[in-house]
Each structure stands twice: as C-alpha cells, then as structure tokens.
Image (cartoon, rainbow, N blue to C red; front, side):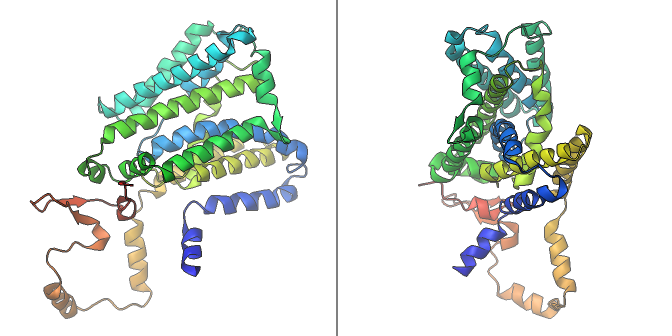
Length: 377
C-alpha cells in the first residue's frame, strides 16, 4: 500500500494539482476578492473553454507534435457559429455541424501534412494557421455582423447545480477522453505510439493513423472551443483564437505531459488550466498589466521546452556517484562482464528483442515504461 501511494505521489501529473491548491490557498493573501464567489463564477466559464482547446493540444503533444493552428481553427469556429445562423436560432444545429466539420477538416489537413508529406509539425501547423485565418477574414470581410443566436447564448451562459455549464461540459469531456486513453485498447495503443513509434510499428500498429487521429481530434476541440466562446461573449472579436495559443501549450506543459511524446494526461492538463486561470485572476486583482500574464505563460513554455533537452539521467547518475557510493573498480567490472549474459540488453538502454523475428533484431526505445503497455486487451 505504501509503495502504491509513493508511486502515485511521485507521478509527474500530481505536481500541478499541488501547485494549484497552493495558489488557491494564497490567492486571498495576495489579492483580496480573487477567491470570492463572483470571481470564481467569472473564471470558470473561460477555464472551461480553455480546457476544451487544451485537450486537443494534449493529444497532439502526446504524439510528439506541437499544434500552432489553435488560433486559426479557434477563430474559425467562433466566426462560423455566428455567421451561418445569422441570428436565426433554428439554424444553430447546422452551424454547429459546420463548425465541427471545419475543425475536423482542418485537423486532418494538419495530420496529412505531418504524417504523409513529412512536414515538421511546427511548419505544417504554422502554415495551416495562416490559411485558417485567411478564411476567417474572407468569410467576415474583416468584421462580424451577427451575434450568437439566443438559444446558444442561453446554453453557454447557463448553470448546472450552480456551476457554469461550460465548466461542467469541459469536465465531462476531460473525463471521457481520460477514460478512453486508459480503459480502451485504442487509447493504450495511442499512448504506445506516442511513447515509441518504433516499437508500435514493430507491433503492427499503424503509427501514422494514430498521429492523424490526434490532429483531427485536436482540430475539432479548437473549433468547438471557439464556438463556445462566441456563445458566451454573444458577439465575439474577429480573431479570438490569438489569445488561446500560448495558454493551451502552457497548460499542457504545466500538466506534465512529455513534450517528446508518450506520457500525458488530460486530467493533469485540466489542472494546468485551473492554475493558469486562477493566476490570471490574481494578476488582474493586483492591477498588473496583461503583459505579466503573457510573460509567465511564455516562461512556462520556454522552460518546458528547454528542460526536456537536459540529460537528466547523466545528471542524476553523476550526482549519485558524488554522493559517496564507490564506483566499481575495473576488475570487478571485467568479472561482471564475463559472467553476464552477452545477449542481455542493459535495462537503462531499453533494448528488447522482437519476438518471433528470428533474426534477433533489437528494438531500441528510450522509454521502456510506456513501451511495456499491453495493447492486446
């Protein structure tokens, strides 16, 4: 039991919840009123919208990518949901269907560019983002002439048991995606593909298909989040997605999702969203400029991108050597090498032999823990 508890608290996904709890605890001390009922009710809807978009970014980053088309697809969804109905509530279902289809199409475009054409994710999604923004400007003519339909306004501004509907909706989506990733065979395969594409391909999995699915699902999340924002604001700005690119990445980094792919948690990402949203509340209550929030978010992303390139294994190994553990002498090492199995791979190298291959081919994977995922059940 103690070992299980230790593993739980050692998980990289727990830290963000501890940080969020500490932030909420000190918020009243830093800025009075930042934890009042009114402040929380004002923060939760926007946190829910950000969480929906951050789900998509989590899926892409878990596959080793990075999606910069958030702004374009988010803005496209926000514009289509008000432009297509033209204030006619009866046309809302059609508008939402078009929004989801546009998000799916945009995500597939990104996925095809990355998986089929071999374009770097940063370049592919940056280029597609420019295309999506161009479509927004073309559709609107540079200005939005309509407001969200009355029924969409009522839905997005509603409450369920006193909790904003947008927050409840985001929570439901986070739980569903988390269950899919952990309780289904497709979800476990998705994690394996992100963790080690080489091992997944050797297991017979269509790696590119899972990566394509990640971008497609992300596109739907971005466009739907934009539609939610339009309903809540009633009359959205022309390019609202520009405000959501950096926060989605920062939330994923804070949540502990590995930027190199594999390890990830949408629940931890939701914790990152909660942390960023409350931090923005505190900054606003202190009267600080919005630029402070951007500086913090940018720093989080920069640290997350930089720290992953540090060879932590070598750092800790050197630290352990300096901590007083004597290094094995050369004679002992030689004797150990002679008595060891010459065919056994070093556990630290993550070398495994492909079963049934017959030619002794080795699968080299840097992440043996995720590679051990059982995708057969």
